[in-house]
Length: 192
Image (cartoon, rainbow, N blue to C red; front, side, top):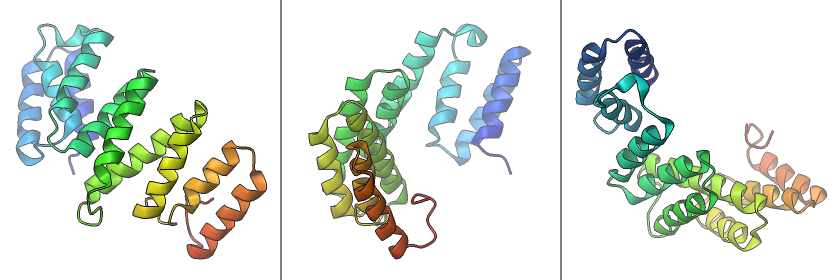
């Protein structure tokens, strides 16, 4: 089966042997089946650059940002922008985008769209990590409330609470919360 990873590997190989046209055709064909694939859209734009094999890091970042900003779903867009900014060490921008995603999630039924749910979980997890690393406990507490309300961790917020307790060096409290998680779901990769 052809997947995103295969197409990206083909594009990378094509760039090294100057087979840009072939890569463009493959990308176009893939996008007819999966028109919302962000990674492939980024490679499509990359292949359209004047010299696709020598795109600077700054230009590559700009391409990623532009493609992600074109995503119509505000939660998916903000989550992906948050990941992009976090990977570029732009913590303030990442926090802003993750907050946008989580604020939008408050008014959405997350049981109806697994893509949106996954992006909310990604945003919450990343924002919690950033909040804990920058000691912004107010942000962490807001994430805990949302995790409880929307059951983001499948433990009604207990797993997020365990992470928060561990960050505050309350290891006994964290362990007790993980134990509660394991009672609820004895087989859980998160809790182990």
